Image (cartoon, rainbow over all chains, first blue to last red):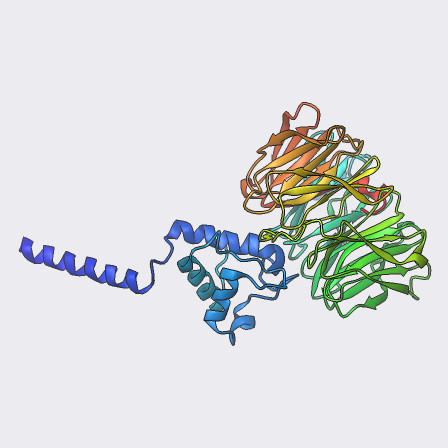
Length: 111
Length: 381
């Protein structure tokens, strides 16, 4: 009986590990809150706190729906030379950038 | 009997609502950027007197004041222009005037309020009493750096078009505009305290574009050319703001874009006379009203710091950590105190500018801009 439980636990753990790997270690909930704040407040200084645009373009799901994900991730990572968009690679790692872009495309969470 | 009582109660309530007589010279507002709300503050008592709700998206908001100091005109990101009565603590008038707005200014005579807009790009002119739209100047470009100038004129810069426009509103229904080349991507502008010179800082290249409004026929000219000396600039996570004088005595103190430096310019020759290394990329570089100190706050990720420059020595006199995400600073009318907003601490702190001691701390939700009524009587504010 104990052995069976142990096996089940191991199986669950294994599943979780597999999931986590597939998602390239999604930021933990605390970091997600920090990222949400960063996007709303700091990206918001150009794109607007409601992400409806300002000096920078709108970042609403509607505005981004036909943009390729890789292009958006590359823009956050490396910025857009010739524009006011800076590279965020010194602040954000790849999985954080992926998480932000995915959330932007589906409607960014409120703080 | 019951009716009498009710009547008496209504009468008493009426009395309680009559505000005590007071002036507005020591009042101001704090923008609570995430709450569509402003707090009305008393700079003598260090208190929040009241809050006014319903001002829309204030994520990038600024304010100017009527010259009687009673009304604040608050410009919201969503294009809302709200006239707030500071004494009655309520909205007097409100119009949605654009899709996406960045700020505004008030005319020399206090009769015209002008909004600067991103979308649709241009400026709009309103009657300061009624907020009736009197005229507009479309630019086809995002407008930045709007500042009032003597003679019912306004200077502003076009981010996309790289120009400075000076519009004369002597006849507010018939604007007359002169256009000047500025350079690549002007990001903000300022008028000198005497209203003579208009400066636009450039983002797309190193330098600042300058116009002497006493000699418009001479056009615009470039100062501080190539101050970056060709070195690659750091990523700019927040655009600096030039609004609010950084002019102290005969010198102007200006943020260097993408550099941890404040540039010092002689305002008689408009040549660089020095640069001061600071903690981060400057956002606001603001002179205390007497010009003896210049206070500097910084862009993310250094936005927990504030530094004070002694303008006699051009050395850093003090480095403070007043809170998390310091977004704005405002001096009391004669500069003995400065109010600082700490967005991520949900607090506004008041510091003594001589001792650097904290005098008060007020709770406010995600505070950003702080604006005092003394701006009503200063050109370029």
